[in-house]
Image (tube, rainbow, N blue to C red; front, side, top):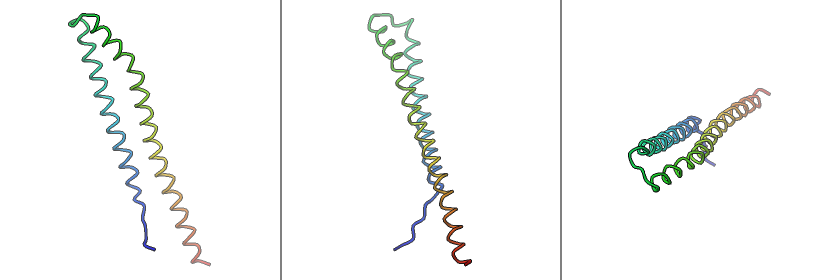
Length: 100
């Protein structure tokens, strides 16, 4: 059986990718909302009003999505930390076997 190593840095890398992409998505969504809101006084019609209402109604959905993904990022970080801690304990226990 070959040796396998866990790269603890991978957990940090995954967390950072999730954070970066989630923040970028939120910025894009905020910008879309702002652009539509800017049209409120320029494009006045029933359709424009419906579009604005629908975008505003979607904001809580976008915020919930952001929170779900952000919580996953936290889970990845905690998983990496827990695994690293467990592995360190296992190495210490393995080292003690040789001291007996």
